[in-house]
Image 1 (cartoon, rainbow, N blue to C red):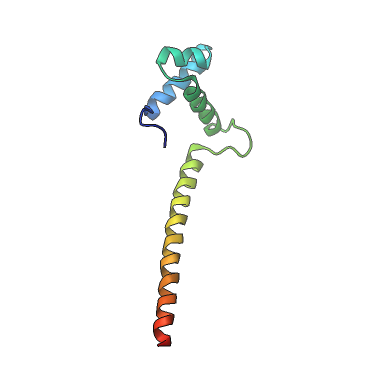
Image 2 (cartoon, one colour; image 1 turned 90 degrees about the vertical axis):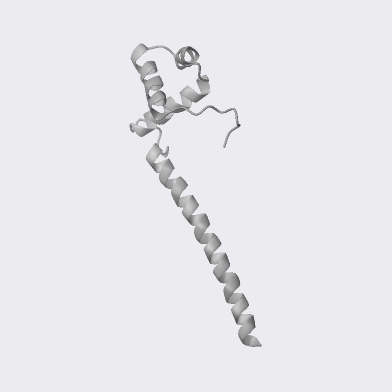
Length: 99
């Protein structure tokens, strides 16, 4: 999940930082330096905003799609654990009934 030193920025801050790049014509690096964020972070936010606007490359996920994928992966893992518990229970009860 990132180091303990990773700073968390609000959605509004990220949106405003991207808007600064768009509205001023300055580079991502210049705006990042001015705001005290890493250019890599601002570049990532900028790219994600473009994807969310439908301006990304084919196959790139929007923020909504990323959230849905995360939710579905979590749900899938929970279901896999449930199936494993049920499988073990079935094996246990099959052995019990053979006695």
